[in-house]
Every structure is written in C-alpha cells, then in structure tokens.
Length: 148
Image (cartoon, rainbow, N blue to C red; front, side):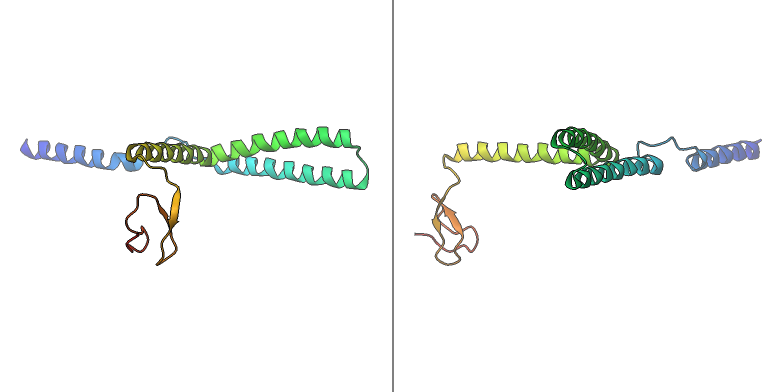
C-alpha cells in the first residue's frame, strides 16, 4: 500500500514537471513571418509605384495635377503601411515610450531649475578646458578647475 502511494505521488510529480514541455503554446502577440512579409511587400510596392510615378512625370506622361493627386494618394498609403509595419515590429510603442521618457526628463529638469532658482544658460567658459559653465558654478563640471 505504501509503495502504491509513493508511486502515485512520483507519477503526479513527473506529470506536473513535464506538463509545460508538452503544453501547446498559444500564438503569441509576436508577428508572424507571413504578416511581416506581406507588410514589407506592400511597402516595397508603394515605393515602386512612387518611383514609377516620378518617372512618368519626368517623361511628360502626367500633368502636374494628376501627378500631385496620385502622389498624395501613394504617400498616404505609404504612411499607413509604415505605421502598420512599425506597430507590427513593436517600434511604435518603443518610440512612444522614448518620447514619454524624454518629456518626463524635461519636466524634471525644469522643476530642478526652478528649485535652484537659476537658469541653465552659460555664463562663461572654463579657462582650463573651455567647457561652458553656469552662472552659479564655483568649479568646472568637466575638469573641476576652480572658477573665479
């Protein structure tokens, strides 16, 4: 009886440990190769159309009104395709995160400048290394030379 219980516990442990290896993975949010290929092909097709349009204008096959209308149409399509491609590759989110981070840094710097009561404008240059220094600096931020 004890042997059967030990064997049952061992079997259950092995099942629990092996389950993640045999579980089917759900399709992740990652971009499939075919979707990426389709978006890249769409982008390249629009670029080719823009090149052909430019060539037709240079050869005199299109007047300016037709050229401008078609060019605007292709540029709009290209912008949409590039946005889709960026979103699919995750670059749109990264760019938005970088922009938000830069905005946060600027806001904190402005707050710090207001707290110190001085503006970050160069009041002169270090005589030792030539680095621009602020009005309230007593030492050069680059080389540490004492400022007069």
